[in-house]
Image 1 (cartoon, helix red, strand yellow):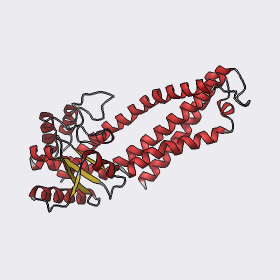
Image 2 (image 1 turned 45 degrees about the vertical axis):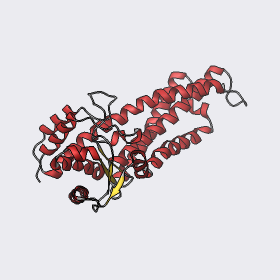
Image 3 (image 1 turned 30 degrees about the vertical axis):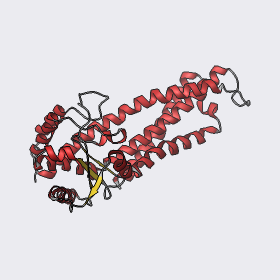
Length: 301
């Protein structure tokens, strides 16, 4: 229900903001933008909404398959050995504590990292690298798994898709509406006449605005990604009853070379590159994350 309400709220906010932007652009251009777009206005809004969400939603629905293929992860059931058995049992225990169904558990060859993905809270995938299994203590690895299970329980993958989809729709709608208005104004002719718009100018302006607005939209996505990392760290602390294991896990990561995940999974990893405090980072710095955990009131087990 909360996710549905969030979905409705974000789209109502999108429609309200589009109306405001339309009014502002009309005032700046001295022309009625809706009139310039004409009968294509409704089509453009529908196109932006559907196309903007389509790619994000397809990516989410295929996220587990894409994740397995892109990093070579293999699903395990615990029969492979003692380490795999402990991993599966620990994920199952944390899932029960978080109130979600046990996700698929996978292992992949690579440097220290772990991630969670999946379109649904109760049908997710948690994967860890062979390197992080080898170099962390079990308590540290348990904290990492708690972090990933917090992502799953919080529905972060779905929320990220909603945010990305709304922003995609914004970019598509605004870039094409503004490009149409500017190209028509530059042509100095009535758009209702066949061939009246300068379509070369339209394509150039739309391409430029796609890149510029897409860059701004990525800042919003990255800001949310950093926020959810803090929340997942805190969620791990609550699941384990203390922030200390998560602090120790982050300190261990600081001494290791984090594995860089493929582009589509990079924001989902426990760590990215050597992150610094930057608006272009998908993760906060390890130091900032450790300080946030140290300032937590010790949660009840």
